[in-house]
Image (cartoon, rainbow, N blue to C red; front, side):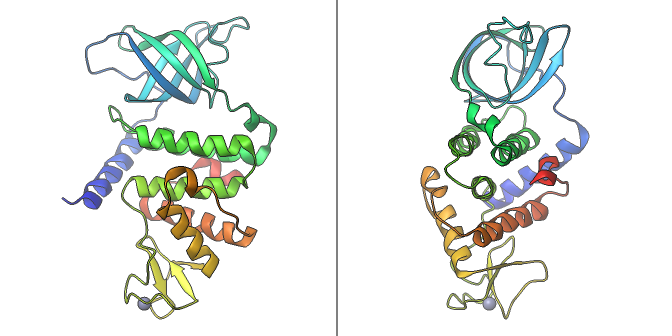
Amino acid sequence: MNAVGSNLHCLVTLRCTLHIGKAAEITRIKKPMESIKTRGLVLKEYEAGESDKRLLLLCKEHGRMMIYARGARKPKSKFMASAQLFTYSDFVLTAGRGFHALAQAQVIESFYGLRTDYDALTAAHLVVEVCEKTLLEDTQCDELLLLALKALGYLNKQKLPPLQVASVFFIRFFAYYGLAPETQGCTVCGEIADTEMYISAEGLICRIHKPGYGIRLSQAGVYALRHILGRELTGAFLFNARDDVIKELWETSQMLWRCHFDWKLKTTEFI
Ligand SMILES: [Zn+2]
């Protein structure tokens, strides 16, 4: 199986996993239980007990982890800041009965600015929903963590349109899985000079080979897509584009999602 095939297999496995079970259970740690230090982003928080929380984290080196934060809902809890959605922290976790419990936490970035803008907040929810729904157990996902942190960082600063940040996040997400569309020329004939181009899950397509489900891309849209896929991660987010071009990129990102996943993201209803 080649790299793309392997990644596709991974996503198909992923669909099955997601149809069978949701994230709301405490993750069973399959390796010997031990205390660990890690950095993690809170993807989801659940109320537990009278004043506790369970937190779904995307952790550096450890990937997906569900942890227990005792007393985190108490107003004076030492975990109050670090046990919030979107917060990125240094954590010390101790082994519990089949799960890890939060022992110490130091906030690195709270992304507080997200709470002050509806569109940025909605896009941030989308970022964590994609991570939450697609992360596999026991899989290291440092590149995905970095991508999520970059996207949340740009949304937090509010210097770029939230839809642009969300579109870049999605397109780079598919590149991370080896599923980036081909952008150099028509995937059927190789034509690159045509000003009327379409994009499918495989890549650009000229008007002669126009697919039934492709998204029409302007020349600026083609350039922006090449920029997003060709730059290193930080630079991929940084470009100026008209609203209609950003809309093309957003539609492209959602077309990719529909082609690779057969279920909808809840947050896209609010975009
Ligand atoms: Zn063609």
